[in-house]
Amino acid sequence: MAIVDVSKKNSIFNSTFQRLEQTLRSMAPAIRKIDSYNRDFDRPEEIDGLKAILKKGAELVAKSAKIKRYDVVRKPMYSRKLLKLEDNLKRYNTTVLQLHQVADGKEILFEVKQLSNQVRQMSMGAAAGGFSAPMLKVVPVGLEIPLTELKKKVVNDGVPFLVLSAPGGCGKTTLATAFCHDPEVQVRYKDNLIFITVSKAANLLTIGQNIFQRLRRRVPGFQSEEDAVNKIECLLKDMDGEPTLLVLDDVWSGSEVLLDRLKFKITNFQILVTSRDEFKAFGSTYKLQTLSDTDATDLFRQSAFPQERDSYEPDQEVMEKIVKSCKGFPLLISVVGKSLLRKPAVEWRKRAKECSKTASFLENSQVLDCLQKSVDALDDKQSIKECYMDLGLFPEDRRIPATALIDMWVELHGLDEDFAISNLYELSFRNLVDLRVIRKDASEDDDGFHNEDFVTQHDLLRDLAIIQSNTHSFQLRQRLFVEITGNSFPSWWTESTEKVFKAKLLAVTTDENFSSSWPDINAPEVEVLVLNFKTQNYGLPKFIARMQNLKVLIVTNHGLSPADLSEIYHLASLPNLKRIRL
Image 1 (spheres, rainbow, N blue to C red):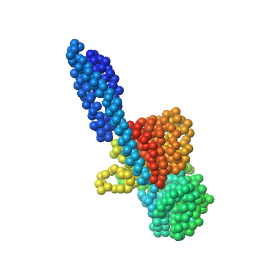
Image 2: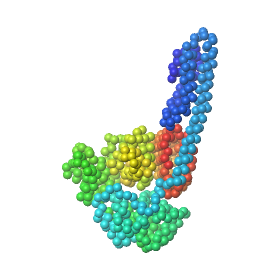
Image 3: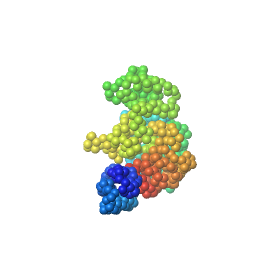
Image 4: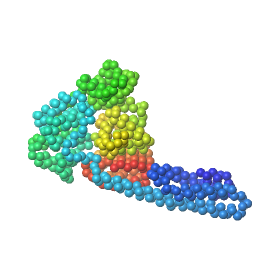
């Protein structure tokens, strides 16, 4: 700065120059930061007054430096002017800049309050009425026989309760989806086909809300799970015997009580469950087998050589080794095939050697081990691998807005928006995520995303992302994923109030019973905070006010009812917060 530089060359006004230098050096970092943010937020004029003072001050100091010791006329005059400059700088620092800070805080509160009103109008977990099964992206491979057998049991034989069981990644959801889209099935059940993804945190209140919505009925208020069961039963009895099928997808082990309470003895009411568990006590089970060698090879070829003649194709022995190591798991076959697309011969031989080490009996943990090799293929693309690992921040079986991912990656990894979009497409291309672009604009060269576009991820791939992030102690992890049942926070959180956590990403998922009673946590380096909730009233945690490095806040209501968001004033003191998504 000119003022500081000149102050070192003139000793007449030494004490004044020293005070000016001290003031300016203390202000300089804040001025640079404010100027940078004002350019980002298109507010360059906010510190124009300060710039004008500094410009005039530089001119004054330059003139003062030319004053001689014996100049008794101009020396007192310039001394007074320098003192006035010092006073102006102090006054600007203590009044105007503080006013801007207060104004910025009020503006943040206003904008957040506007955004929070949107939470009342939306619910990420809510679904429209009518046919509810997800769409099929591709024609399934090797499911013709299972589909025929499943239709015979459900449609022809009228089995009231059937469990479609298989290990993770075996294609249960794909088969259930294909079943729901089958013309014979749609003719029988018409609009009374209800497809609900249940997942680990299943409860009857959520299932009841979904059933009423799918059947285009007004959702009543449930006082308890018992009340929900009674109202579901009354609704189904009012169907006058119309064929109705409830598909419960991805039901976890330990859900026996839930399933038992939904087994109503109502004419033409049936339940189809997909699960890794067979639930043998509940009736019939259809065990989905892994793909045959022929079907596995067909699926692998679709993934590794999608209508491309110029791609390298290995000899039959190498391909057979790789396909055989996948043990007929469709998910594994697709991911491994995609990871080898357009790869040279040496990569194929390397993968064949690695896959040959896989044990013959494939447990779930070994599926993850095989999938790990496809993630390892991203080692030379660290940016994409980091983006993949970030996906563990979001709850299982939920739609993740594509725009939320782009916001997060731009701020967290310093990516250009186009590079962030490219990374998402790359993850989709490798079958590590499922990207659904809902709306196509008239402009075909528009590669951006819209609020309707979303990403989903298979449970196993999400588990793998979390495992990748959990290699260090809780305090040293770059990503912290926390799932809270009720108000039971993990001991490493509640017993570590004095410890400092190094995480840059923190995700906290709470259920319907959470009271917004937050224990403190010291995580000053967090740049991305993801809060997933299901309650109708949700308060932001107090500790958010101390996350001075926070850049992105994503708050998502995964419940089925509109929600009130409170404690938003904690956001007013966050100088680096740039993106908020509700």
